[in-house]
Length: 487
Image (cartoon, rainbow, N blue to C red; front, side, top):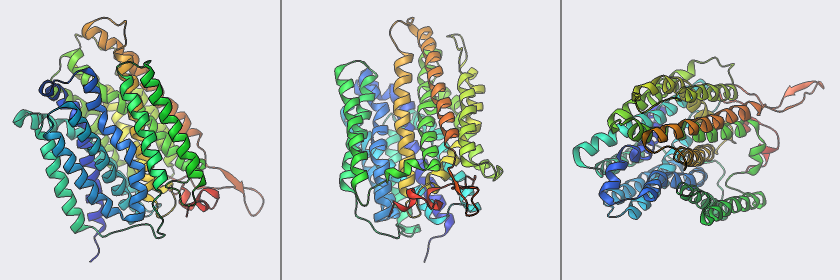
């Protein structure tokens, strides 16, 4: 008996929701966790960033593997990895063990996100009204995870200590895996391909080394170790691209980066991570240490951004079909930038509520951007590679988040600032300006990704790719080289 489309959307959205809950847990529990484990500033930076490393190294790889070996299988395995990793986190006797567990949780979460969106892309072909609706549901799940995660972690901590949220995540992961195994049918790419082992290993090494360098940069960006790690990661990624060019069945065809819809979606995801996600990730620290807000109050204030994004993700399907995915992403990033700038100007005497107007403005189009990203991620790749498209897009998001959060943390706490809350707030204002620049640069880059045009049969110009809001501006519909080069 085949699974219903409703079950596919529900399970895939729940998978993304759970991955984002796990991702946001340390934002609310870090002070109690650091006190319990005796964690210093460098260890705290690793706790905050470790799941980003797991996500970054595994998203694209897990997406490519899911398409070839089975998306339901990848989702169930991701649930198992997340459950085991969460138990490791809950039982951690030291910071190092907790960081290892968080990296493992990132690997499991990567499989949940990539395989879940891949299942949606397989069930609802690009260009259909159902694809617009389900991309909104997926975007809402992403925003809901960000919104509820800190509140759930704070509540669990109040009831049973800092480790309680990890036990809860383990339980939810087990339930998700069982439901996925029972409720979903297997799906995979029609053309089976061998797993690109060299590509997986090189990408994992390159992203892992690069993100490790970025985490280390928070406690000293000019140290030789940091420079060596960042340069080493970039070299490994360059080697990965070269190897992918040579292989007959690469995990991701480098020619896709010449496809305007794919490039636009990737750049928008990168800008989202480096811009608003980096800003809001550090905002909880600012409200706590700069304004004296409790963890609960900080999480409630952050709802102005995340909960608003949930609502607008669901409403995004009502936008006119003539508003292309590229335009939605570009305009959305501009409005997000306006909201970021509205966060400027807090003083130690300010109330945390003064951040609400800016977060509301940013949240209005964050939901639209999330919905468009979910749709374009699977519509901008060849048919049968939906999970790979999801993995590539979310890799860009979390690598951008790691870069942006590192930059924000370094700028906000740089030497030379006044001591105490006043210095942190002053530094955060400068960091917000930098993160806003990331959002605006992303908007400009996305807008520049215009669909190419080719001569029509009558000799006049004709669009090479449809650039419609329903995701039809995609490599899967592109008769040119990017699609032909991918088996």
